[in-house]
Amino acid sequence: MLLSPQAERNWEGICEVLEDVLDDQSHKQLFALEIGSGTGQHVIRFAQKLPFITWQPSDIKEECRDSIKAYIAATHVKTVLQPVLLDASEPWDKWAGVSRNTCDVIVAVNLLQYSSFKTAQGVISGAGQILKPNGLLITYGVYAVNGVITPSCNEVLDEELRKLNPEWGLPDLDVLRQQAYGNGLRLERMVEMEDYYKCLIFRKL
Ligand SMILES: C[S@@+](CC[C@H](N)C(=O)[O-])C[C@H]1O[C@@H](n2cnc3c(N)ncnc32)[C@H](O)[C@@H]1O
Image (spheres, rainbow, N blue to C red):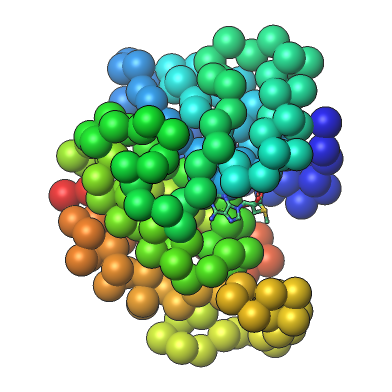
């Protein structure tokens, strides 16, 4: 089981956002896809707090999928499916058999700044296809706004990410908003989180 100290710190705040935006649907059985699940800490906590959702975790890396499996086994949580290999930079019809108009929620935590812009485009265009009408895409991370990165700690983070991989770095919120619009999604809400992180909540029209 991999352990991310950051995931241990941020899961509760993200979960509160999920509880808030999904509260009015808690009488239904929902289906959620998590993209770039990483260690699996988030999906387990989300499942424990939101029992009306069946969760499909996924990651591009085998070591992450193994860790997610280990968390599922250790916690005996019943509403988390076995993780699937999903590369969000691929077209949605290669997303491990996920079908069009089947997801109520897609969650991507700290994925967009740790991957290429092609991945961000893939997440958004895929969400436009696999979300049901009114479904939600929720991304948590740090963003540039209109080409500007503030405060200085985020500038440093952006530089560090680009040193690790020139394709990584803080995505621009306005570019994401435009991409979303072009794929039938609207940026409905932005929730300020700790340390200048934000949850972006996109709704499929
Ligand atoms: C910074 S980690 C975040 C993990 C987890 N969501 C968290 O917050 O702890 C980014 C994750 O995205 C995954 N990832 C990177 N590129 C991806 C892609 N194109 N498709 C799906 N997952 C990807 C990585 O393997 C990694 O697990």
